[in-house]
Image 1: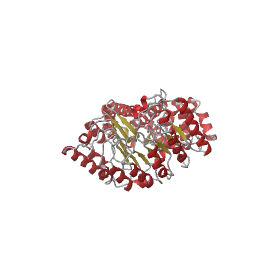
Image 2 (image 1 turned 90 degrees about the vertical axis):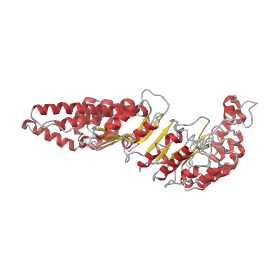
Image 3 (image 1 turned 180 degrees about the vertical axis):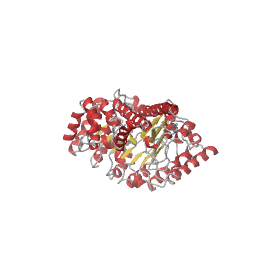
Image 4 (image 1 turned 60 degrees about the horizontal axis):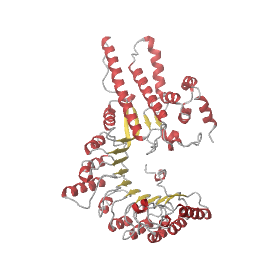
Length: 527
């Protein structure tokens, strides 16, 4: 339930005119509650005023919008409302322009002395320095007119930085001109560091937004509004553009780099690798769909690969790697053995792993610390099965998330690793989607699943015996897509699975044949 304080805050913000008059007299401790109430009720005018008068040095969305003693709604886990975010940006701009103009107002006239003193006293109580938006959720692929996704958010913040920089310079020029005309000293061209507000955000950059974001980052040292990136996600950027962005980022702030769909390959990425060690606080590096292939190496490609290994050896804090769709056959040991810290999240989907790769991983210093493991697309039906069982055994006390989608797992392989899976006491998410498993195998899986104390989600395939007759054996992924499903058989299997959950009193477990994208990985706590 919401507290009396929160209900009062909602009452206060219901009338914008009254709220605006009252803000200067409301205790500073109430401002976070007012902010959350205005954000929840989409009171954009109030939200803008609250931000403009923010009495603390930091405005952190994660801290304010999470579930608290005043409001049990965890707003930070919801997709951000577009109007509310725009109101916050406008409030920050209002705050900065007001501060800058007050700072430039002549105070040597006696008639304005008292006003100046009041402004100085007031500013001491509200020196906003950081607006932290890094906790906001992305809306993924789902379109919603009322919310704002990460890409649009990035562009909006970049444009705000550019806009306030231009406005500041224009006002500065006008003020300087007036002072010169009156015999006063011209203003210094640089931005007063005391008047700078940093926007900390997760940036999503594509070729369409590259120029705007680059311009915003370039003016950061002189603009009153400075854009700082914690998590960088870049798609379809050339190596040159990627490097130009990395050169503009603050090494003290950046913690995550994700470069995807760039098709650069090893040789193209070799221009980017040397920049990774610059970011000493980097904990996550993702390079999915980058066309990395080590199976047929040329001398130039081998040199690029060694450049990547060298970069990895100089990244002391990395705990998360993603090489999805990179052909890394036989080179996993070289890549992962140089990392200084054990990995907690490792994604090697469709990496064409060899037994040597899986055996290394099972016996490496990473295995006991892995919390997320994605081996989708690797063939677990044959020689990888033994090492895979060892991986489960060695990560049994840490593993939270396991994905083996499309690994050619049949009932025989499933039976082999279920004993090891049964010991994964921390497992919350398990996916074996798109594997040719029968209804009997699926029921055996669920009998194991209900014994896992914190398991929440099981993503499973439609059993092969629920397809119409004529399905080739063993079926490929394309066969499973092309052949029709016997809905009556599938319904019967669903009832049997539900009966297993009911008998085990584990109706809290979600079983689904749909790819599940809503599972939160906050429990990984990589930050």
